[in-house]
Image 1 (cartoon, rainbow, N blue to C red):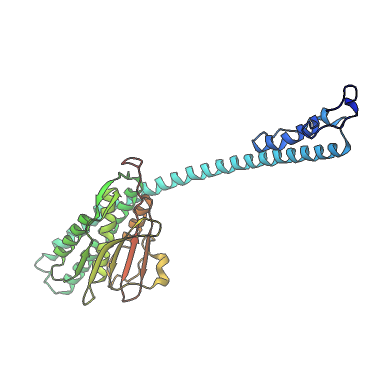
Image 2 (tube, helix red, strand yellow; image 1 turned 90 degrees about the vertical axis):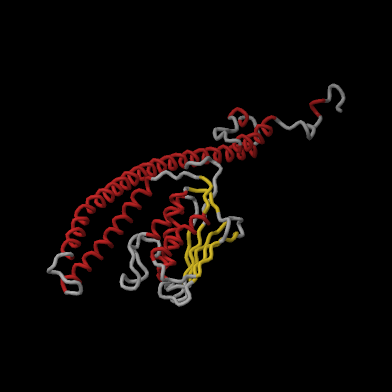
Length: 324
């Protein structure tokens, strides 16, 4: 402590920092806390040392530049958000128009298709048309194409309805669904002998109707693509990934496909085999992929030509109620 009367001669102690320097140390803290208008006041710089003035000027310039950049970034973010909102609105409108068009066209096609099928059936029963004749074969082909067109229309309607359908989540017994689907497939083709393995206790939290559609597509495909396999095998099972999520699998030892074309697999109307080899519409897997996506999951495929295929998918659980 300095003697009385000698205070002006004593140097300042370490803990008694000059006021300008104290103000300087506060500025970075204020900037860090979001006060982008924080500056070293001018009046503190007037009688300060030259070094302090230079540092103060640099701090203020840095703060001003930071405020400008943040304002520019905020403006750009707002512009991009507006642009994204506009494009999202336009996309939603386009999707609604496309869904309405698809639904309208599908419904409009049903009437003439039904008429064609009906006329063919009546003609085939005419006395002039004998079974096995050229006319009979022509009518048979027309009927077959009418059935294919009907399946295509059903697929289009399914896709159109899927985009609007509400996903109602509830515990779903996938094992029971798979068993029911296989029973129906066996009824339609009782002559076939297929070794089917379905794991017990497979469940998921999702929309029962939509998940039924997924399994119906995958198991029906497995049934179809093993139709030319000697000892056909189909398995529906599950495993747990490293991330702890349940991964479901539908696997067969049927025709398989070339993985070089796997990019087309889940696209609408894309097919891996010709209509002559295995009939189909090219809509089933696209529908399955969209349903799985709406459940927050993923679906992948692996295969080899004449060595079967495996489709693996997940269904993400949610605790936000039974409707999403």
